[in-house]
Amino acid sequence: MFKHDPIGINFEDNTDEYDPEAGTVIPRLPSCKSADDVVTVLHEEFNYWFGADTAGNRSRYKELGTEIWSIWQNNEP
Image (cartoon, rainbow, N blue to C red; front, side):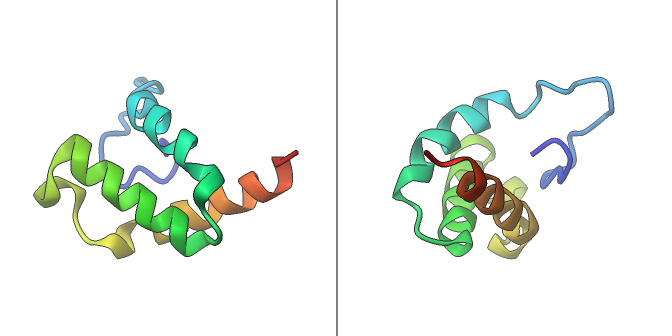
């Protein structure tokens, strides 16, 4: 999340900034069946944490969702 920085809070020295959001996204990954599902989860969680105005459009999470899905698929037991 820090690398993709979907809401613009990466200031290079605050690497734990997305920890709370990651903590709510990760438990939802087992229910995801595709990268698009991950994008939906990300958008929902960022809306919850930051509000719709700050979270922005769902398309903002496409690259991050695709990367998370790829990592999830490669590390799933």
